[in-house]
Image (cartoon, rainbow, N blue to C red; front, side):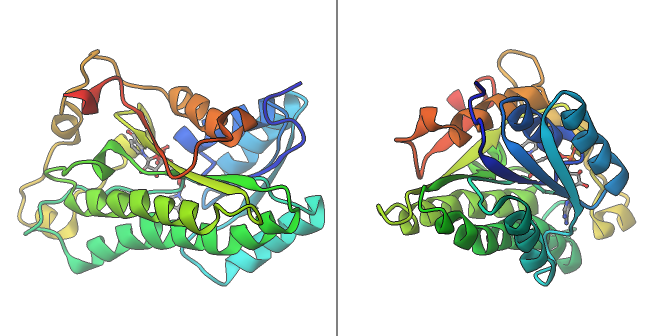
Length: 262
Ligand code: NAD
């Protein structure tokens, strides 16, 4: 019996990195998983990987910032499975830039994916979660950058701080016995994914020829000296998604090998 056997899960940004590991882990543990992303080829591959191991998975194309697509995604989950138990708001981007070098367009782009996207995930996911009358678990992927400032990633930090308090507010709104929906944020430290390789330097910083090296940002200090893996985060999300964490809501799970301990 898997830890989330028979539950229905929706994971955004599930084609790569942390999202792919979360979707695969929930699938391995018995959930029926709906994966969404912009990258259809890789998203289909992750879903096929879950099915090949005997799990159930469906991939759907989605830009989390497009509000019109949300009712279609949730409608498809309802048609197929008739319920939603686990909602993971994972899709996110990071743009490296100093504050003075950041364009308003880059600021807004991060806000759109990292904040609007998480808001829309909750706004459209919660009503279907409520329908079963059995509650559910929402997990929002923030960052250690949502717990403290980050030079060179100020815009990103602002979005992840917003996610942290949004998660607590959702937890309070949905905590009643009628809803019984839990909501927690997860704060990864430095995890080896492509987000670091594809992190663009903000347009104005690039023009000023004063880029900030992602490796320098990454070297901010992991006490164990080791980068995390997507599986490290997926294991934490599995705990929050499962009934093993049924008394935990409005909480923050920091998975950072001690970065925030000092
Ligand atoms: P990643 O770049 O490897 O994967 C992100 C996925 O999200 C990609 O598949 C991408 O196509 C998708 N995506 C991006 N914009 C989207 C959109 N508008 N709509 C739908 N999908 C979209 O990144 P990752 O490292 O796996 O990051 C996952 C989450 O973890 C993000 O929220 C990120 O901020 C957070 N995080 C990552 C780290 C880290 O060190 N990797 C640390 C802290 C927090």
